[in-house]
Length: 105
Image (cartoon, rainbow, N blue to C red; front, side, top):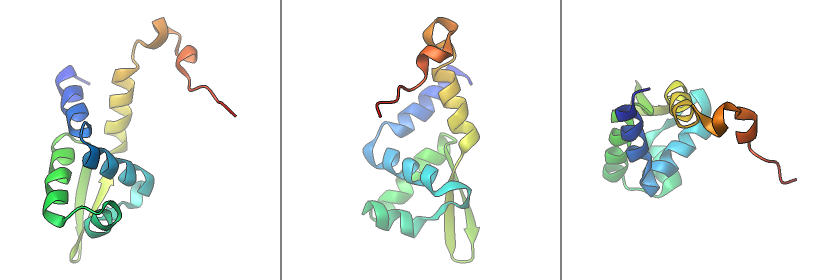
């Protein structure tokens, strides 16, 4: 991943509504979620949601497909993995085991 692409993805996620929308789409899995349902779950008006989804789409983090009257949005998991990989590429001086999330339970 190029640094410019990482900056664009991080900028798209650096807004409360967009981050919440992306997280819901990640949770929805490969099936995705209709835009209307996404807006209802986040209590975001359609025009505002459309703006946010456009920004996430421009950053390559989500994509939409039309099914009948609905637009179904899905998270772009390869792009998410690439961003995480970019952020952790040289993690912990090359010892990724040190970077693993610590369990608190």
